Length: 117
View: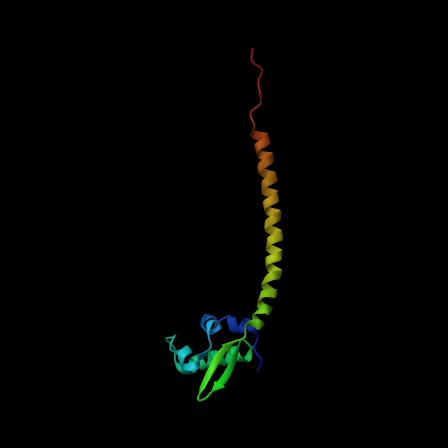
């Protein structure tokens, strides 16, 4: 089953695993030692990360090492970028409106000059 990268990063444990192995390749036991959950639970998280392509397992002797493959996160970045552009446009329009409104309010509140006698 090929999983979606969004499904993989939805879980905080999997995000933490990605963060750990992005710094350095770790064997499965080293990953598991950093969590208060069972080794089989960690293996299940690793399997999900592997299925979506965020983690590659490399066999070295008797150990299986996890390596990060962060290229798949490009999908997430592209998805976020479309909303970043949308909200940037909306917030810029709001800023422009508020500046115009403040200028109009200041103009109406300015004291009228009176002639002195």
